[in-house]
Image 1: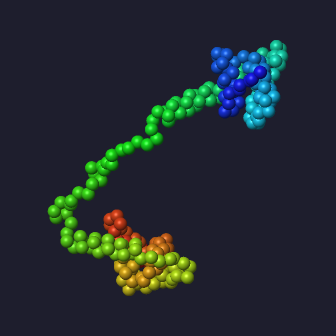
Image 2: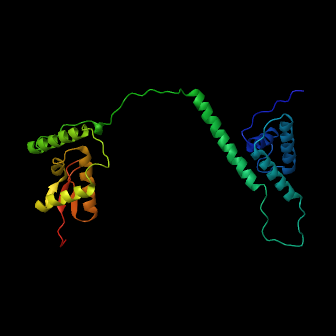
Image 3: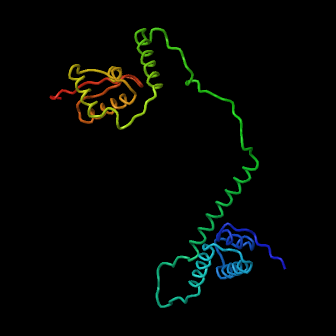
Length: 239
């Protein structure tokens, strides 16, 4: 005799199979009947030397617990105003949720088989993302020249390869140097100070030093436009 057993993804899958194969109402499960069928199924799987996960036996224990609650005699001498909850309620809720997820996964499997893996799309660019010429007179020649100089300076720094190590210029030394510069000229800028450093490592140290001085309320930093220069101003003691 050949026995064919379908592969189940878990105890809820097996339980749902037993309910659907007999066209039972999922909200009114005959717990004694389903428990016996579930245990018979596990016995068949053990006879075939199939490895069963522990969750199958946990479900069997749950079914037996619910069945035992139905078998326990009721105390007729105690009157309760509220009815006791149905012991099947939690199990029914799990089965309903599992049934919904199983239908959704089946739908996605069909979609995955029908829809191709790759789909081509023509490149598109939003209208507001395109480069538009500025109206005449909106930017002066001096501002355009200054922006070009800043862009070239940033480009040069970007292509300057350096390695920041602990043997570089100490941050405290950089802080002292910035204080000396601001003592001589209370208002300066990040780009003006960066022209005086020799390497990218010192440039990073300069930026960290400025952050430390801002935290200590020694200077305040402002930026008029995005990616523009940082204006540095020393804070007076009376402020």
